[in-house]
Length: 385
Image (cartoon, rainbow, N blue to C red; front, side, top):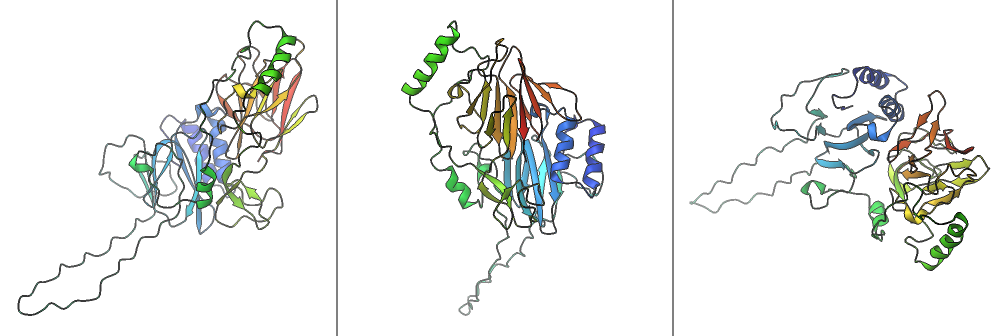
C-alpha cells in the first residue's frame, strides 16, 4: 500500500498488520484506513492499494493524483469521489509514484514485508525487450539473399479501465477497455447541472401551505431534467455462476454464497440496500435518495447525475430542512451528505461515538447505520454491501 507521509504512523502499523493477516482483504484494509482517518471521505488522502486475491489475479484501489501504471497503461483517479478499483493479472508490471516525481532515475532497492519510505514503487518485472536485429550487410558482388522476416511477439497487456478524466491528455489513452462499459456511456445526459438546495430554503418567504401547492404545479409544467427511468449504471463487479453481481472485494456471492473466482467485469449495478424511515417508509437504493420535509430532487446535484428519489419525513417543529439529507451512490458505496446548515444530521454506528455530519462532506455508510435528522425522525440503512 502506497501512502503519503501525513498518515499517522500508528495507523500505518495497523494497516501493515491487516495486510499481513490471513483474514486481510481489500475490504478490511480499506475499512481500517477510512475509519483510521476519521471516517470522512474528505479526510482520506491519496493512496494506492494492491491486493492479491488468487494466484492469477490482483485487485487495485487508487485515489487521487497518484501516478499509477499497470502494464504500461496509466490508471487515472483524480476526479473519483471515493476511489477507483480494477483488476489485473498477478504477473502485471506496476509502477506507482507521488503526483510530483522530479527524479527520472530513482535508485531502486528490493523490499518485502516492511514499512519503508519510498518515492517510487515497482511491482513485478517489466516487459522484456527483444534483442536488437543486426543491420543487413550490403554486398556489391552479388544480389543479397533475402531472409524471412523476424516476427516480434507483442507484449501481453491486460485490459485496465481507468477513470475517464481529461481526454485531451496523452496519458488518457487506453490500450483496451471493456466494450460493454463503452456501450453504457453512449447517450449520457449532458445537461448543465443546477445548484442544490443546501440550506433547505430555496423557496423563500412563502407560506408552507402555498409552497406545498406550487411545487407540484411547477414540476408538472416544467420539462423533466432526467428521464423518469434511471439509465443503467454499470460497475466493475465480481460475478458468481448464477450471474449475481458483487463488489470486487468479495470472495463469495452476497446473494447465494457461491465462490467468486472469475475475472471482474462490468455489470449493471444491483440494488445497494434500503433506506427505512422511523415512520415505516422504505426506499430501495437503486439510485440516490433525497430526504427532507418537502424534498425537491430537481434542485439537488448527485454524483452520477441521476435525479434522486424523494423521501418525505414529518417535522412538526420545522427542524428538518426541505432538502435535508442526500443519500448518494457511487460504484458500490452509499454516501450520506448533509444539506442542512441548521439542525444537521447525526450518524449513529455500532461501536463508534455519534458523529455529526459536516455540511458539504460525504461519509461512506455501512449496513445498520442510523441517521438522526432531528424532530424525532431517523433513517436506518439496511442490506448495504
